[in-house]
Length: 124
Image 1 (cartoon, rainbow, N blue to C red):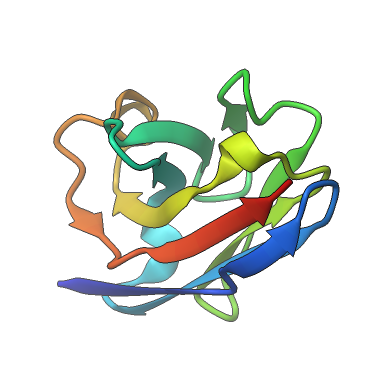
Image 2: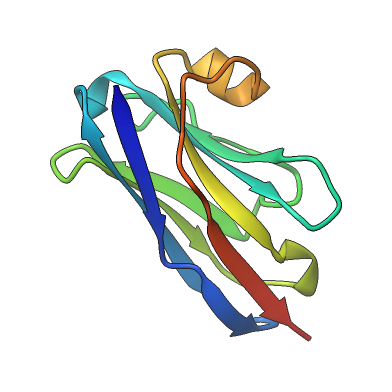
């Protein structure tokens, strides 16, 4: 089992920045590919960013490219999402995900572990 706990969400004005963190416990963090997803009100949960076990294989949704950066620190069992130039349409609950397969993370289907989510609200 892997437990994932997100933090760092909150209220920010448009144009501002936030850094989300996801702390993992349980099985060996470095054996998992990690990802961030988000679900806006009334919408389905969608892919934001992914990172492989050794910080390779980075990928982003088009909406995140150039503004968001995913990173991980295997010594701290933590994955991050740095979000800059935030827009009101970035408002959502952001979820951390873990799976041994980076392909699975990118697909969003059949992911083994999910966090509980952290709310990000961007005001205009």
